[in-house]
Length: 400
Ligand SMILES: Cc1ncc(COP(=O)(O)O)c(C=O)c1O
Image (cartoon, rainbow, N blue to C red):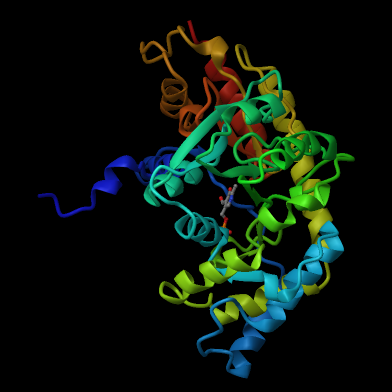
């Protein structure tokens, strides 16, 4: 009898972490490696946020917090939802956790019965299907297309719904494609959901502030208030405020769901780190002037990367609305031979040979459920991106 639980045999380790580790190992061996695989802003946490944490330590805010979060943070979250999203959540409708990851995980933990289905559009963030599987549910993957800019179509959503469907997961802007739904596109999806009252919406809005040009971010409960009572609106400070290491995520939703999440979190990690919570209060309530500055920097990087990747032979790269990823197709490279002599049969071969030949690390589309593509994170300097894209161009030109 194996010691490790059977459910673990259904779960894969994170491919993004694996690629990042491979790049690190090569670097340690002295190879010159550029990593385009990371999922976090290269910017530092703003000084006012750091200062708020230092003051919290000095004030002695070092005791166990309430499981659902410190009251000032829950007030700040409710105020943020009102100010930025027009959502009428009360502080008592909110929950703070150790990263958005814990919010998502516990939402599945408290709702999945064996065989319950969760609709996940592909390409998807690597953790969604695995979290569903760990908690005994069945991920139902609905593939999107390059032609539809990797956005879930209403008719495909309709077709995927069964009596066992519990959740649909929406993530806009998306990791890995960067695609974001306009209000009209979201409305087409919420119209379908209004016809299926047993289906709940888990919306992961963590990249909300990273949208470009004149794109306007919207979220399902805002577009369709009729969905309030079955939507969990999840967000966090990791990406918007460069606070990935502080581990603060949050959500708002119906009382019965928040109560269940409170109960499991109370038996699990309890409240999130008090110092990080005070830092998050400052991030949400304090000056917001760095947010557009950083967004503009990301937009410039997106434009550079999209333009340079479209000049690489055999690659096609859409220009997405947000996040800090692009998701080019490498279909034109499949069937060709790399400088090592290896034939490229999959997107995994493509990124493997790219790393070997040019020392550029990206993540294969297979990891996100849709290929042949690969994910490029542009959360690094313009100079590094330019060098990396030149290397990608040289690599694709070398394929025979
Ligand atoms: C789509 C998406 N959701 C959620 C998260 C988790 O964010 P955190 O746990 O740092 O709040 C990430 C992080 O990579 C992400 O890309």
